Amino acid sequence: MSVRGLDTRLAKPTLQAQAIATQSQLVSTMSQPAAVADPVTPSVPRTRRRWAQRLGAAAFLFFLIKGLAWLAVPPLLIVAARFMGE
Image (cartoon, rainbow, N blue to C red):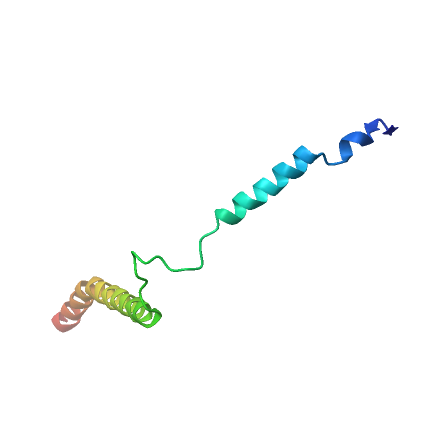
């Protein structure tokens, strides 16, 4: 039986196709990570991780401002020397 040139027998799922679909669902659920934490590598507590992130951000900002200040010091010294020289 065909509808517009398509064989309707192909549209019905076979037992083999159902078995393959079920197997792929099982494989996809098995590949998901387990909810249990890995006993070999303990996780870092959230508070310690947060403090480490804050410390890292503070260090980055400190060295950024320090570097920009050192880039600004020589031109300021030159301007100051010209101003004092006149």
